[in-house]
Picture 1: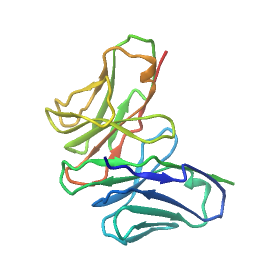
Picture 2: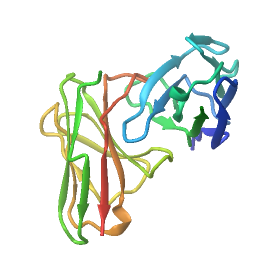
Picture 3: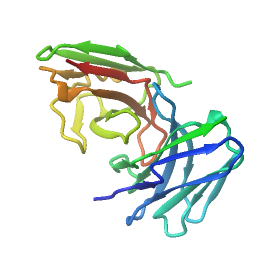
Length: 113
Length: 113
């Protein structure tokens, strides 16, 4: 069974600080996504990474897919209160429509003003 | 903004009642999903559908049932609600394929007394 473990589970930091959250597995994934979910809403896609070693930037957010395609990280520079939310990674085992999509356990991020 | 809708947003109901949670999308997506999520926790897939007349059970066993008579509509029914069913229920849809973007509705927060 494929599992995605996210760490830390909870993180509370001051506005302006940097942070990194992780998504790890013992399984290889064909691609991986990061979603952010705000309270009372559904998750919204931030990025999809498909190539081992790939790095993608979205303003202050930097996403990296591990070389072995078993892990990913999300780095936020100069965190803002608007970054508060639940961050979920999701991985697919294959490319076909029947491929299972696995969601990680989530990191709850709180940015203090 | 995603065109996927869920009603009701909040539902408080007594034990033993039959309930149907509605989910509709106007994007013409073939794939639709139901997830169960306790507040701030990971998503658990309970049902999914590849298209009309296709329904499959997800990874988390659920006493709920689903139907897919029309592409745009994927309702979830609980024949007899119990307090253990209290949770948030998220509906999502996507194009066919491996790891494609899932568009989530805002969720239904269900409380069974």
